[in-house]
Amino acid sequence: MTPGISRRARVLAAAVGTGVLVPLVAAATPAAAATPAVTCTSAKAALATKLKKDITAALATRKGTVALGFHDRSTNTTCTLRASSAYDSASVVKVTVLATLLWDAKKTNRYLTDRENTLAKAMITKSDNAATSTLWKQLGMTKIKGFLAAAGMTQTKPGANGYWGLTQITVTDEQKLLKLITGKNTVLSDNSRAYILKLMSQVVSSQRWGTPYGVPAGVTVAVKNGWLQRSTNGWRVHSIGAFKGGGHDYTMSVLTHGNSTMNYGIATIQAVAKVIHRDLAAS
Image (cartoon, rainbow, N blue to C red):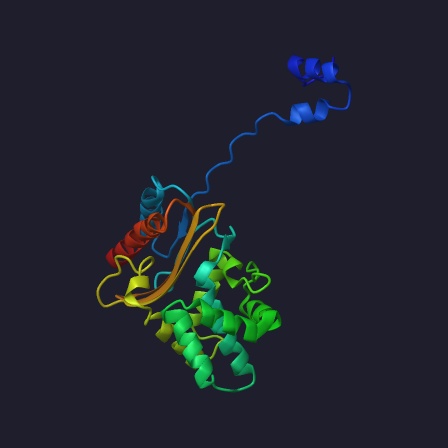
């Protein structure tokens, strides 16, 4: 008798010959993995507790897989969920493309050309795919990877063969990018940061859903969204945003997939955004 092996497994093994015992035992159903929990920290303990509770409640009935990154400089508050889970970027990567273009121009101390300005504006404000493909090809993989390295975005993997929308992103790296755009640093010049925020604040009204939902009056909004349907994991629907005003200076990245429709994904993101804006405003 072999210790620790059920009688059924031994019978099966004997029936089909030796050498199959390990696969038969290994086929036992593993324990279900624990669902990741929202974690929040803050200089204001009560704020962290409330955000964790409210974000968790906002997601409790939502299907699909959601990743969240949030940081408020003013209260040193951070919330995360699935911070290192990879998602197909869809159009959210367009902010990275623009940042790469500006980072590269800074290295040679040049301004963007009129053509580049036109392409950048169309790419961010209207989410123009052709403009993005043109800039992606112009930059090339060496420069794109160079920017990611300079930005510390080590979890971001550029899409191959020109498929920029299949770049793998995480909320950790999207939050790093938003931090660069919204605060002084050596990677992007102040003018470059202002330019990116300006275009993100001019996104057409039909694409201003997601993280800005429920933002209080008087708070500035910079946003870029992405959406993509594939045969696996349904709709990818993402939103990244930067917000300033009302005594707060914060960034938010919400990535989702496994959505049945684009609108379902938008509703999930907005449920999260609404409680974050509300809880911050009340703090």
